[in-house]
Length: 387
Image 1 (cartoon, rainbow, N blue to C red):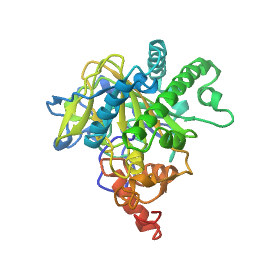
Image 2: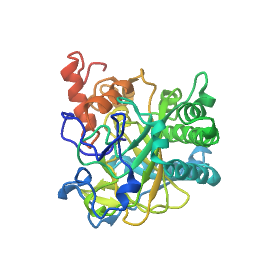
Image 3: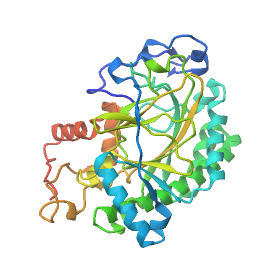
Image 4: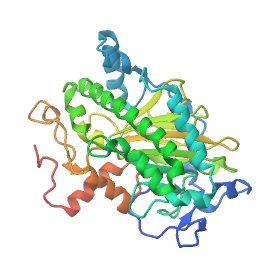
């Protein structure tokens, strides 16, 4: 979820492009766009910058056909998903049921929010150690290799008291009553993502041979995260990235990208660009589901580039388990039930989330580094502890 590549723990305070009057830090993209050069904190190493890429032809899965029980659609969906998730953890879904007007409204609300004066956006500023809120370039957390983007993140609960109004309550509490309609749009969008995510979990279960119900039931009481990503025009896009190379710590990411493009996926030893396909949603496997599949499915390594002249927007929904629920693969995927040796210890989503927010900058080694951290801090954690 957080952008960037890092080889270890955070060891120094951030060096920020600008500092707010109350001591916080921020990235005001409108001021930087008028300059000919980007600040050095945004310059990425030559080896990590974007190059000319091949196109990734991602499989397109008919989600609606699978959910209706169509045998041909189910067979093709299982075939596509199995191959994609073993190779790189990335695929597209069509016939997903999300209304086009809802997507347009959600993108329009993004334009309204990120177009506000900077001091107004800071009313929703992310607090230290948390995920929710507004941030510019993650400059409140990191010192270098900053991503050229602004984000607004908020939570969504799948069940429990107040679920039907939680997103609206967030917007009105941090931004005011005038933002109730924006909250309603994102409440509806999150509800749509909930239904899609649970359907995809059914498909993943079938593809792994454990049936429709296991993963769907595991995630029915989830606490997920919605993020609006805004990538402003950049005067030197060849020197920076919008989102650095990383695997998402969450279980699953469902992404709507606008028609500008900029998403890239790493597979077969090199980066590939992913052009927007009208009517589809992007799905990528995250670290949590890699653990839930006992390593059979790959967490998707991806990044985003920026454009010199055109802004880019995307809507990312991160499916996460309930914070206190133990993340462990089903017995059928672990020896002696006919599966493989246990690859990751039990953990909770809260543990992994806190690790990425307080100790580690999410990259392509997050799950492995987290596993090592667990063993170092809890000697009772072993790979076969719960076999």
